[in-house]
Each structure stands twice: as structure tokens, then as C-alpha cells.
Amino acid sequence: MGKRKYYQPETETMPVEEIKKLQSEKLVKQVQHVYEHVPYYKKLMDEKGVKPEDIQGIEDLYKLPFVSKSDLRDTYPYGLLGVDLSECVRIHSTSGTTGKRVIAYYTQNDLDLWSDCCARALVAAGVDKEDVVQVSYGYGLFTGGSGLHDGSHKVGSLTVPMSSGNTDRQMTFMQDLNVTCLCCTPSYAAYIAECFKEKGISPDRLTLKCGIFGAEPWTNEMRKTIEKGLGIKAYDIYGLTEISGPGVSFECSAQTGMHINEDHFLAEIIDPETGEVLPEGEKGELVFTCLDKEAFPLIRYRTRDICMLEREQCSCGRTFIKMKKPTGRSDDMMIIKGVNVFPRQIEAVLLKENYSENYQIEVSREGTTDIFDIYVELLPDQFDDTVKSISEREKKLKGAIKAMLGIVPNVHLVAPKTIARSEGKAVRVIDKRKLSD
Image (cartoon, rainbow, N blue to C red; front, side, top):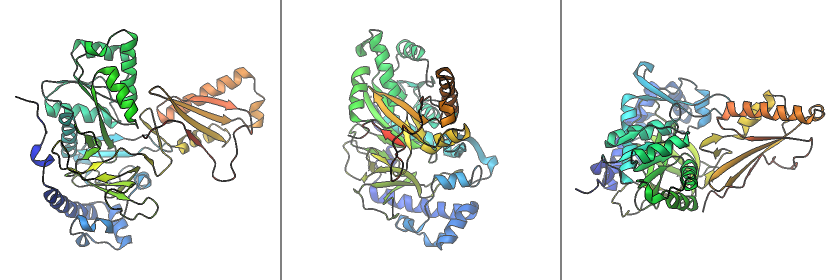
């Protein structure tokens, strides 16, 4: 028997008109549900003059208000819950932008649907129950590990829940257990490939066949590096904690974009300035509506990711619309080493630690590794410190920023007035990475 081509064939190859009909039915139900059970949504809809009966199908989606990350922070921790807390069985969380995290809730049904989405991604990459899947995304509050872990279980593969780090152990298990699929961030996959090369272990000595990599931006150039270094085919996966986690969309063998799981997530592209819905094929901000999430049912959530949607006949046979790889953001968020980083997070730490508001973030890439530098101007009285005390200050500040972000920057305390001033908006971020081809 050959490999399974689809995890849920009836759904993944559903005619487009049927997909749209299903989406319309689910949307009508979901809008009624949030209006009745989430006071915050009722308030937003009332302010816009929209009632549930105004939404008869997906053609009426544009009438509904948007929500954004600021709404999630304003309603922290329980304000967007769509069910009683006793119905929730798990949370996941994003990193906080000013110390306050965004918490997403899940019912058991939410988890089941999410793991189905991840199972679809694994099967699209050629994985079945004969495979050994090593999950090297972080576990815990981060969605990466749990999502692919549960998806691998659904497929019936032997699942190796490694989490991230301890690369020597990763490599040992990969060889001893004949791992065939690796799931992690692309930068970590590239690092593992480098470590194998340093140890003189060539790709043909590994049993790896494929990898599912996401959670941070990566180029096709990086894809080629990983594929050559590990002897695999590398697949992209996309998701957000707020929407569920990885598996919102995934690449198939065609690798011409990521199929969105349209039976669960309704996608739009809007003009980030005006909010106007743009036609298919135009570039703009990606917006998602959760069609059947129970605990955290976001409607018209602005992702801030810039990309385009395209519904083309795919050689894999799937009929789900594709999203192209995001080419940037409509806000100031960066993704560094798989972590969402906002300049204002760093600003909050600097002010708390009594430093100048003049700082600059520089992100570059050496090979496949992100290099994260922060330059901070000392205040005149701090500049009088000795070299030793400045070094101690840098170490302390590095620890405070790590506590906020979860990743370690290189901190450089510099003399007053050495960071270039701008007559317009201050240039806080210099991103030297080439993240789009």
C-alpha cells in the first residue's frame, strides 16, 4: 500500500462551492454564539450597528468589527472566553508585549480540531504511522511542541517529544531511533545540520526524509540549505497562538504556498490602512476568523502579517485556498529566533532599569542563525562608570531583557548621543536579514 495522500480526504478535496457553503453555515452559528456568550463581542457589534441576523453567510463577513492584539490585552485574562471556564482544558500563551501575555484557551474539542490540522500538515509532508516524528519545537506555553506532538499522535506515528535544546541528545535520538521527520524552527534545523557536519556525519547516514519548520521567517535559500544539510524535503507550516497554533496552514508537495484549513479558518486580505477587503491575488494584511473554535473564538482577527491569497488548482489535489509566505508585518513586530519581539517590550525594560529612551535594535543573520544586538545610550552620570561597572550593567540588562523576551540579546551600552537622531520617527530597528526572496 502506498503512502496516504490526505489525512481527511473528503474535507481536504471538497469542491470550492461546498467549502464556501460550509464556511457560511459555521460563520452564522459562530457569530450568534459570540454575540450571546462574549459580552465584549456584543459591545463591538452593537457599536458597529451589526446584529447576528445581519450575517447570512461569508459574503456578510465585512460587516463585522475587527479584533486585534490590543483587544486581547484589554480583555486579559478572561474577557474573550466563549465558554464557561470549567469547559476549558488547556491554555497556551504568546510572549507579552509589555509584560502582559495573551492567553488562548482550548476546550477538548478545540484541541481535537487543532491536532487534526497538524495531522493534515504531517500527512501532506508524506508522514504516516510507519514514521518516527521528532518534535523539537519548545513545549509548555508555546504552541509549537504541543501542536505537532498531538498531530503526530493522530497520524499514528511514533512521537519523540524532544522539545528544543540539548542538541547532542537530539542527534543521538535521531540516529538511534531512525527518526524520519523532524519538526522544529528552521534556524534550529539548520543548526542541527551544522552539528552533524562538524561530527562528520553525512545526510546519507540519517534516516530523515522530511521536516516541518515554522514559527519564524525563513527564505527559500534557507530551505535549500536545510534540505542539503539534512538530506530531506523541508515543508513550511504557519499558525498563531491566538488562532490555535501551528497548522492554520501548511505546505503540500507542490510547495507553491500554504493551504489554509478552510473548514476551520476563514481568511481575508485587507488594506492595513483602510480595512477594506482586497480581491484575491492582491497583497495586504491577513485576517482570520475562527469558524468552530469554542473557548477562544476570534472573529476577524488582524494578524499583521502581509501576504496574499490564491486559489489555484493544486497538483496535490487539495482544494483549500493557499496563502503565500508572509513578506512582512503591518506593525513593528519582529520574529527573532522564533520569538515575537516588539521594540516596546525592550523600551519597557530600559525605562524600568533607568536607562535612556535612546536605543537601537539591530538584527542580522550569520548563516542561518539570528544575531540580536541592542545598543543603549548611557545617561551622562552612568557614563562616568568604570569599564568594569559598565560591563556589569550590560550583564544585568541582558538578564532583564531575557526575562521579558525569553531570548538573550547582545547588549551594548554606548556613550551619550552616539545613536543617530532622526528628524522624523526614530529608527529603532535595523533588520539586516533578507527574509523575503
